[in-house]
Length: 163
Image 1 (cartoon, rainbow, N blue to C red):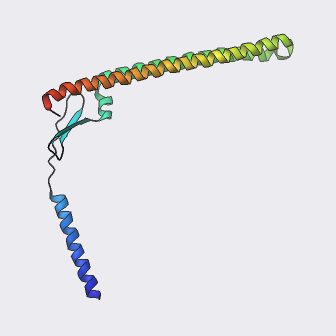
Image 2: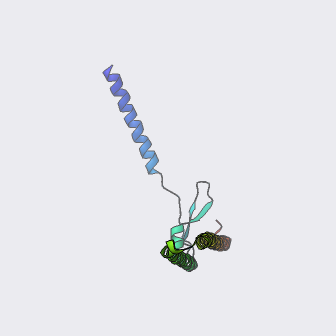
Image 3: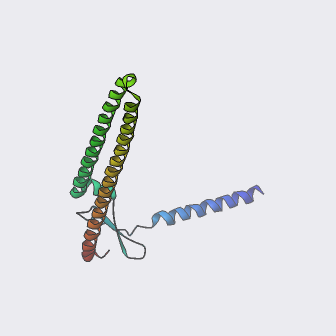
């Protein structure tokens, strides 16, 4: 009985060795030409057709238009945040003035201050929403433009390389 298990284990070990040999001894037929401007590369698939691809981090690191547009978006975001911070500071100053008056305010003045405060909060929220929508639209336009430029480049590149 022990010899049967030993024989089966030896046979399995030999078969696993053959499988490892067959798996790792085959050479890869992949060729990887580099696309200069977009940082793309291509490889030959098992069916013989070429597949082209690029790495997004290479695009972000090496594509000058991408860097410039990203910096432009960052500047817009900083300007938006600065505007919102300025509005919030001015509202805080107004609220602190009302708090200082506090007990000296009449009921009608307190009601007017509450209405003005509510109106300021509403205008702040609407301005914030408008700025965020504008920034989101610019961001989407940037992404669409980048995609369009990449597709145009790849179409032109594909004419020559046949990917």
